[in-house]
Length: 151
Image 1 (cartoon, one colour):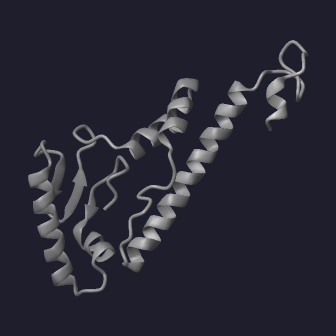
Image 2 (spheres, helix red, strand yellow):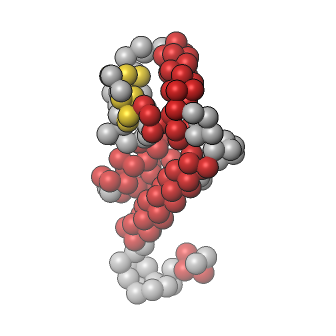
């Protein structure tokens, strides 16, 4: 289960194993069912959580996440989009979350690295668009650029 991407529907069994890998599959699936029941009750929009047969996902039109917004801004790549992406990225996703589950930790590390790479790309693209079109250390008119001392 990955509620951050447009293709958010995921099979239940791998999702259960990702979160409850230290217990048997029947118990993990029961824990997932209970968690999904609790989530459905907590969500104001009952259609936000899509449970269809053996798949679970989020309705992208009903749920807004900062990660999805960040990914969309980076993908669009306009100046305003990149500025928004940079503003949205405030560090590692789920920072401070401790879930002593090796398979979840592996997923989380990979997701953090993927998002960090996107953020670095957004920062670089934004910097390239904001940098004056002149010689390094000079502005577009050839004058010394005070910002070059900061780099």
